[in-house]
Image 1 (cartoon, helix red, strand yellow):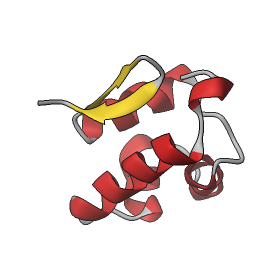
Image 2 (cartoon, rainbow, N blue to C red; image 1 turned 180 degrees about the vertical axis):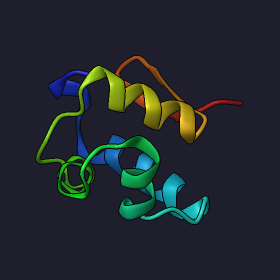
Image 3 (cartoon, rainbow, N blue to C red; image 1 turned 90 degrees about the horizontal axis):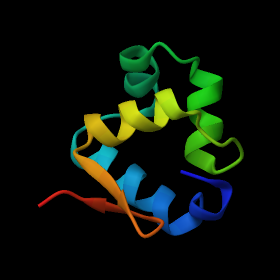
Image 4 (cartoon, helix red, strand yellow; image 1 turned 90 degrees about the vertical axis):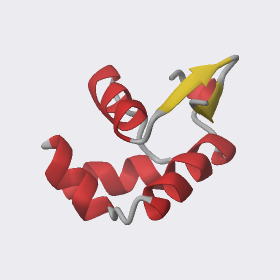
Amino acid sequence: MEWKDYNEENIEIIVSTMKENGDTSENLSDGTGFSRDFVDKFLKGTMLPGPKLQEIVLTRYDLTMADGKVIRKL
């Protein structure tokens, strides 16, 4: 995910998928080992995730990137 891909639409897909799974930023922080502050900034769009967090989030919520968009795997 690059800055150009890190937009409101992609973040909304991640957040809505988290909610569908019953997760909060605290769950994501606990499950990834990243600080709650870092996860909150990522979910608000103020901090770009590194490759490790990006991979964890996409895998955890069965998402993928295609043409700069976060999409749900079929």
